[in-house]
Structure formats: C-alpha cells, structure tokens
Image 1 (cartoon, rainbow, N blue to C red):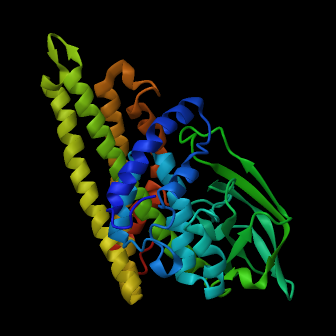
Image 2: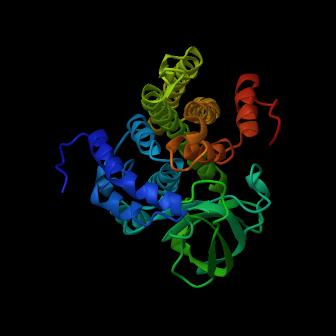
Length: 386
C-alpha cells in the first residue's frame, strides 16, 4: 500500500515501471492489456482529477496534464484509457452530475469499481457531431434510446457510458448508460492500425431504457456538456503527445550513444544530432503550450465564464494541434535514428509512430483544430462551420 504523502509523479513512475514489461508483451501479442486496470487500482490512480470529497486525488488540470504526460510515455493506448475514464468520464460527471449520480457512479469509479466511457462519435457523425442519428423519446418514467456509437474508447469494458442522443425537439442530451442492462450490444474493434492494448468498441442501443435519474444535466445541455468534455479530452491528447515526444527523445539518445557506425557512435554524427535537437525543442514548446492550456482550463473551472471557456478552448486547440503533429514528427525521427530496428514493434519508436497517428484525428482532427484556431482569431460570424 502506498503512503499518502508520496508525490503523485513518483507513484505514477512506479506504476509505469511495473506496467512497462506487461505492456510490451500485450503489445507484441496485439491484445487488450487486461492488467492495466488492476495495476491502476493497486497504485490508486483511477481518480486523478476527482475531488477528495468524492474519494479522488483532486489534481488540478496542470497537475493532471503532468501525470498524463508521464503515463503516455508507456504508449498512447495506455493514456487513451485514462482519457476515456477520467478526462471524459469522471470530469464530466463531476461538473454536471447530480449528487446522487456522483455517489452512485463517481465515487466507485475512483476505486475502479465503475469504469467510464464517452460516446459522441457515430459511423456518420465524427467531425460533425451534431449530425448524430442516435435518438431518444420521453416515455414518462424513462427515456428510450436507439442508435449506434462507433470508435468509442473503453466501450467494451465500461460499466457506464456517457452517451449523447437527440430528442424529438432536436435538443442534444447526455445520458448515463449502464452497460449491464438489456438493450445494448457491444462489439470490440480490433482491426485498428495501432493501440492494440486499449479497448475500442462500437455499440448499438435498441429500445434501451434509461431511468429518468440517469439524464446528465438537463435535456438542453447536451452540447454544452460535450464541449466541456472535449476540452478535457483535448488536454489529455496534448499532454499525452508531450509524453510521446519525451519517450522518443529518451529512447533515441540511449540508442544513438550505443550504436556504432562508420567507426563511432551515431550520436557523434551531425545529422543524428539534428534529429535530437528538433525533438528537444519540440518537446519544450509543446509542453509549454499544453501547460498554458491546462492553466486556462483551471481558470475556467473556477469562474465558469464564457470568456474563460473561449480562452481555454482556443488554447487547448492550439496545444492539441501542435503536440499531436510534433509527436508524429518525433516518432518518425526516432524511427529514423533506430534505422532497421525502428521498423519493428520490438522497439518503442515504431509503436509510437503507429499509435500517435490517431492523435491527429480523435478529439478533433487537424483540420477542425485549424478552423477553431482561426475562428478564435477572426471572431463570431467568421466560423467556417456551425
């Protein structure tokens, strides 16, 4: 049992050290890492951003970003689990849930007794979530949901999924879906390019009955809830990509010092040093932008103003766009330094290269991030999409 006064980064480092050899095996076998949650329970890191009054560790967004950076060095798949459970799940319920919902779902989630997922994306509703077709009708004492959600992290292992649907009046609403009830059918998606050790699934709701008390927020708040959730999801992706860059740099330095070609360590070759220098400067710039975004989200959560939200939204879009592209660049450079060994999942750079590519797609594509950044400069009335 870990002592309560240990620094959280030290605890997370111990978790990562214990997880790494297991993750290596699961990755090479291309299997879901079923030891991740038990280990996270053991190290008590399943309630990172949850307030202490709900049995969490109460980390600020800045602290949380630093922890996610550390975790993501072990792989984007590991970090993605925490995104679904904590960034998109716990933080959303903590902000919009009723006290009963927090007692029933949030508190158990900090011990791993409830695992969360977040379902906005559909087969034909990705970058345009408002085109969703999942729908609900009010049946008096419950809601009836029908529809399909696609490419949902943790959906195959989650106990509760925050699910968005449109009502007859076209309002988007959010619901807490208990996956152990009738009316839901799940299917794991295993043909992914990367991140084999994390669970990604689709699910279909067929006349699924949602109790009235499982409406999250009020029926008109769905899009507001989604935007807040995506704010947190994008911070997690950005921080995770910083961790990817850091690991690629560390792996590359170690390899370059030990690999001999043309009579000397390749670290002494100028073109290898060029790769390392780019990776180092990209690491520092993406880390600073990510921490700035985290600070602005902390500010928004304190004052709740629209102005604060807009500043945080713009900053996290910038950080996510930059960090995800620089992580892809770092992985590519690291593979190049490793040469033939880089083109193998036996070495970490190859895994990072494959895994980090999706970071430029989920939680907002590169293209959407560019448009959000531009609209923050131009102001209302100049949005490229509504």
